[in-house]
Image 1 (cartoon, rainbow, N blue to C red):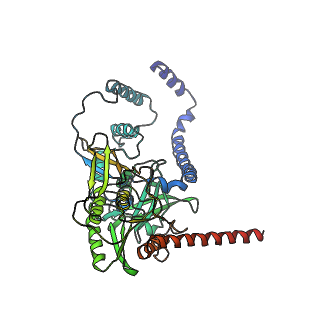
Image 2: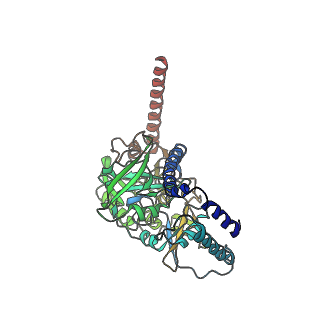
Image 3: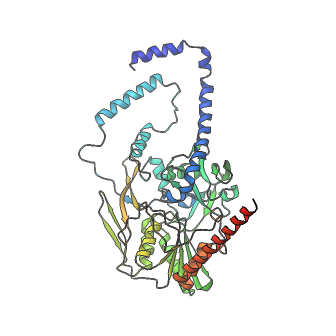
Length: 482
C-alpha cells in the first residue's frame, strides 16, 4: 500500500462513527484480557499434549550462576571476544538499515498506540530475534543488564524462592522439578510438577529460562513475587505469592547409610561442586563406607569442569572422560590425570532430568566400567555452549560443540540407558522430599551396593511381577463386580 493510499484510508477511518474512537481504550483492554484467556487455554491445551513427554525433553537451559533458585544450567565454556569478522555477513546490511528506517517512519506516522517511553531498547529485540532465527533453544542473546545478572556467581546462597526448574526445549514450558524444604516456594504451596506460566505480569511462555530467573524471579530480600503455575492434578492455575529470602542450599549433601553405604547427592554442578564432592567422598570413606551411591536425579548439569573434576577424582589415570568436537573450536579430549582413584563399588542414580554435565559424569564412569547406573534413561543433552562477550557489555551464547562419552557415542537426544531400569513409584515424583524408606530407586541402588547387580535385578523383576499380578487381580475383581 502506497503512502497516498494510507492517507486516504486514514481520512476514511477518521470520518467513521465517533463512538469507535471512544471505545479504542476499552478495545485495547479487552484485547489484553482476551490474550490472557488465550494463554490460559494454550497452557491447558499444551499441557494435555506435552506433559506426558515433558520429562523426556526438558533441557538444561538455566543460569550459569544462582542455579539453586531456578534450576538447571547449560554446559558453557567462556570464550574471548572474537576479532572483527572478515568477509560478508549472513545479512544484507546495505538493505537492512534503510528498511528498518522506513518501518520506523511508518510506526511514527501510523501506529495507533503511543510507544512506551520506558520500553526496552528496540535494537536488543532485533538482536534477540536474529539469534532466535537459528531455531536453537540453547543459543541466546543477552543484553548488558541480563548478562551481568547471569554472571552473578553462586556459592549455594542466593535471594529467591527456593525452587529448581527445567524448560522444555520444544514448547518453552517451564516445569518445577524440585522445591526446597521450608523455602518461600514450599511455604506458598508450590509443588514439583507445577508448570510456571507467569511471574507477576510477565508471561513465561517461551521466555529464556535464565532471563526469567535473573530478571523476574530473583530479587531483593523481603520483596514479594507472585508466580502463576498450572497444576495438572487439579487442571487449574494458581497464583502463589511469596516473599523472597536468602536461601542456602549446598550443591552436595552426603550421609552414611546402613550397611556402610555412602550416599552423596549432587543437585547441580557449580564451580564449588568438585571440592564439595571430594570432601564428601573423603569423609564417607574415612567413616568406613564400603560403597558409594552418587545421586544425580533431577540434576540438569552446569559447569562441565566440575563434572570432569569429579570423574578424574574417581577414575584411575589415563582414562577418557569426555571429548568435544565442534565448529570453529579445537577438538579436545579430557583424560584423567590427577593421580587419585576411588576403589569401592560406585552406583549412580539417574533419571530423565539428569542432563548435560550429569551425563558427562555418568558416561565417563559407566563406559570405563567404574560404576553401575540405576534408575531411568537420562535426558540426552550432548551439546555444549560457549559465551562470547560483545564490546557493549552484552553477550551471545551459542551452541559450539557436540560431546562424546568414552565409548565414542554422542548421546544428544539419545540419553544414557541405566544398567538397572527402575521407575520411581507412582506418587513420589510430586513430593517435596521423598522419605528414604519409600524411595524405591534408592532401595534398588542400595541393593546393588550390598548384593551386586545380578541379585538386585532379580528382586526388581520379582517386585514388578508381583505388582503386575496384583493389578491383574484387581482388574478381575472389578470385572466380576460389574
